[in-house]
Image (cartoon, rainbow, N blue to C red):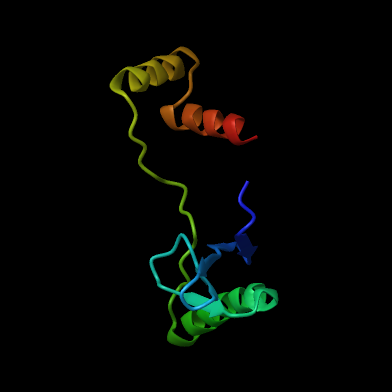
Length: 111
């Protein structure tokens, strides 16, 4: 499991190191708005992330914009046609929807 992922107020970031500038960098992931931050001090990067999230939320409020949520619960998955068919048949035989079967399979995979 990656140790360079931070989460705050239901937003997350992946911290990356820029060796050219000796800077740690990140951006809020999972939203269309671009919000980034950086620090040359590793002990401050989490605080910079928190500031970036707080600034984003304050900005949205000040302009009357609803802050984007990271995930809406929908996404496209590309799989082999035979696997798709097997999933649909399994769902029908068990009186479930394809979405519920896929959701359960993912939940089982990630624990």
